[in-house]
Length: 440
Ligand code: DTR
Ligand code: CA
Ligand code: ZN
Ligand code: ZN
Image (tube, rainbow, N blue to C red; front, side, top):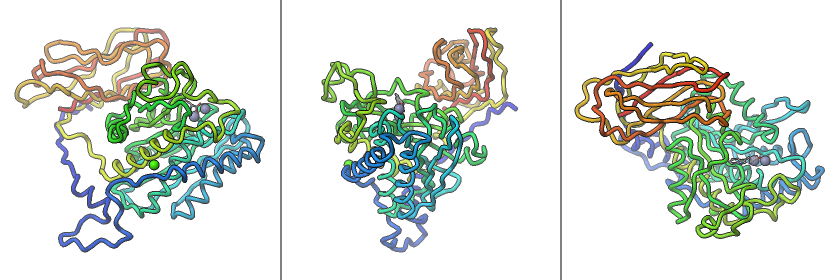
């Protein structure tokens, strides 16, 4: 069915603010009780608390063969440690089992009671290490940062608009296994309630960079804003696509974001000039090695990133998720894309708009297609002008293109038939256009 229906949505910031403070503000707002009032701004996350969790993870690894890997006792002991903290803090915790490589794996999921059950904000980290070491930076750091943020939510007795859910994944090092199990076994009706997933995998690298995932623009901006606020420049994370747990959420069409301080790649001179540290040396020389211990952490990076996690949870948790302001024109008809064949199109017809299209026209693309590197994608304006959205990239073997592109279409008249043109330019792998959306 093809829809070209403008849909205007209204912002509900005032209600969101009230939501953060407690129940929606009644006509004659009673003074909120102390327990009901959560701080408007995120609290500082004490890095000493985060490091205390890392010390526990280190002790657990030392007592269990030197690692916290999937299928080994150190992993389950790490999970039990975090679960006990969360249970004591008032969370509803769930341990989800799965099998991988002939061993039982476990995810830990912690729900903070309250908030809109149909609008879930998630933050997660993989809890497992490789078998060759304790995995304190990879990824005790992300696990501890998320854990301490969850405990800060409890300390504040936060009442956010959204429902908050935190997760610690098993068997990420075996191929994002635990988070894939979580996403794939979740009923689609539940999955559609997740309005965003934030991933934190390596946030304390000893020679740190400050990288922000460039997936969902709202999540990206929220995390970048934090660092801008403390005067720390950031870069877009380029090596992480598909390499951590957010990939499974993204493949399911859920907006994702996250932070990263670097792994085996070397810090450049330009990066050392802006971030400090050592040029020509890896961000983390102990990545996947036995020396990834509590001494393999930069406290400042761990502190800043933990505070950024809290900033994102407080900020995004306070806002109901509504589609971006604007009129939406959408075509949800599936269009099959022939393998290594002719281009196909999905179109929307825009009417009743004066003048030209905006300089920041949002183009929502949802294409289900294995090995998305085969695909060339263009936006074609009513007069036939083509705007390249995506080039073919042979090596990109990941699935699906679920993106919102921003196009400067100010030279184009708004009214008329706009087309999404897609061509598969390499053999094997097929797919289809699931939906095409323009937001003015
Ligand atoms: N943390 C690594 C995976 C990884 C490597 N580079 C990035 C960039 C962004 C996120 C994750 C990664 C691991 O778990 O092996
Ligand atoms: Ca802090
Ligand atoms: Zn790893
Ligand atoms: Zn990792």
